[in-house]
Image 1 (spheres, rainbow, N blue to C red):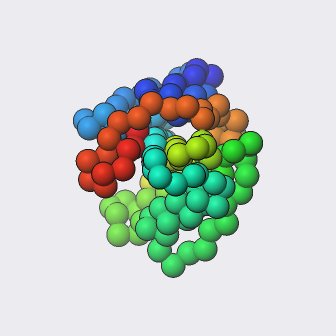
Image 2 (image 1 turned 135 degrees about the horizontal axis):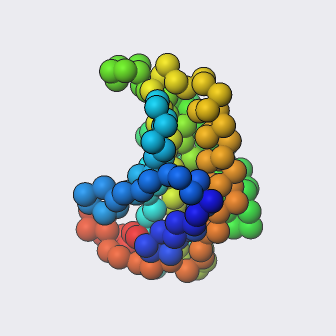
Image 3 (image 1 turned 90 degrees about the vertical axis):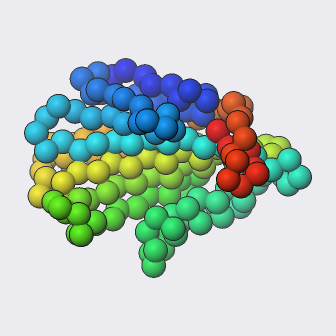
Length: 171
């Protein structure tokens, strides 16, 4: 395994040594993938939400990741779980049948309670072509990814940049 550290310091994630990585053009998302046929692609994006006038609590982080999950997978119910001290997570699975070929998306939203005014959120999505979704190699990769996400090191003191769309600070 090798460790990838997010540029803003939000997390350190262990990924398989043989996986390649590249940053997408906007520099906001990092993509990891295996060279195996029909292998999935893991996309990681970290943002830090900062509100200088409101204290960040577990319930505020839950509301944030529930809102994000609701936009990603409408009409589904999610229950945040505690994965480590000050870390909350939602998992979801989505079928994109209109894609050609159809794609299965497994997703994890990890929110970090970073008092007094910050809430880093890391979005992980693993996309795999539908026909390969139930293969033993895909199921093994999903187990590795979920274990890596659950055991990742999450930071309570990430770096901030201004999110110009909302006026809030985001990393």
